[in-house]
Amino acid sequence: MLLIVGTVPDETFPLTVGPAVLDGADMIVNGIRVPVNRGTPALVGAVLAACQVLGSMPVETALVGDIGTGKGSRRLYEHLSRELPGMAATTLAFHYLQPDVDWHNKVLFAVEEMEKRPVLIADAGFMYAAKMSGQAPSYDLFTPDVGELSFLADETAPHPFYTRGFILHQDNNVPDLIARAHEYRNGARHLLVKGSVDYVVADGEITGQVSKPAAEAMEAMGGTGDTLTGLVCALIESGKSIPEACRIAARVNRMAGEYANPTPASQVMDIILQIPKALARVLEDPNT
Amino acid sequence: MILVFKRISRLFNRLPKNGVRKVKDDLGILVFENTSEVIQAENFLKSRGWEIKVMGPPPGIQSGCDLVIQFPLIERLMLTRQLEEAGLPPLEVVPVTHPLLKPVDLFHTKDFGDYLMVRAANMKLTIEKKTKIIVNISGGGCPDVPYLAREMVGRHLDEAPRPGKIGHTLCGYALELAHKEMIHQCS
Image (cartoon, rainbow over all chains, first blue to last red; front, side, top):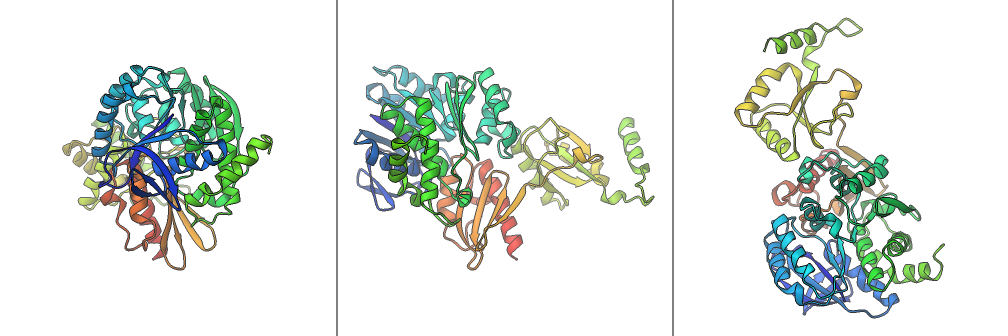
């Protein structure tokens, strides 16, 4: 079972655990309708779209409303630290949660108590917490953008606030940043670095780069990094190795963007709708 | 203190090639350890009427974080004294005396024809030119980004809530800069 842990940008959204389904431009979890625009709903949307090609697989979500204050995240952390040991996830993806080192550590302890250790994936706020805790090597995959990679690579930074390059991206030195994150044990075993070039990394070594196709308007679109992380999660849960899943996901996300023929006003759902077609194409011919 | 006066004296006695000295145009930058301090210092200085600008650090400065404050160098003593009294002492105060010490602009603008995108640091805000409706917000993995996008996309540029008011993170701050710059470019 793939378990996706994250937030919904609505304070009134309750702590909700259950499977999600896509319905038009919305996602429905336990009868609650959520627009799929960006953040964790976009990640879930990409997973569900990929399942149309990869075949039915159990996908559960653990979501809570949080607008960036951390209130909802803390309730979800508390729930996970209590309930995770009894859950049977094979892939566990943590997404937009308020970084909180103490709660992160409690959740990681709960993961260690699970009967079988799942593949651990972290992105966005939870990935910051994983690095801040010094526990990054416990994870199988991080999916940072270049700014987030700068934070992983900065062994002295206790918080992104202290990092040079967190908001002023240094696209020209990604290989150095990857090496440094690995050297100081602040990266997961595998990285998928998202950017104008996507880098696939295993144990500090770059094993692949994906830069085509590239739809120019995607630069303006929010949520495209979330769909990429969602695609990787689905592919790993379907049985692909992590490096293979990263390479396929990067190709598919770009191709779905191209198929959507986007304008700068296009929304991420336009890309999600193209994922089944793009995924089928890439799986049929990996050299596409 | 003597060292400071000597440095200032040297600075004031430096003449440009055309022989005309414009001390009032000389600039300096304040370097801080983290961006939270920059934002606090910016608010503090602006509330006291100082003419300052938040920018990216120059390539010649290796210390500090992603943001610096540019200020008129002639005001150095008064300004740093006020910051120290406010508990916001900068890590370094650097005169901009070399191209490698020139702070970098945080803004980049991209014209897509019917759409205009402004990027401030890692956050991008795109509007439809004809209607000035915000059509997309992208960038950043901070926990408030999905909320900011939900509140702002689909709204008129002038009517959307200010990210500086409803955001909680560095990405929210960067989006506030992008929003202000877009309003400036469209006015």
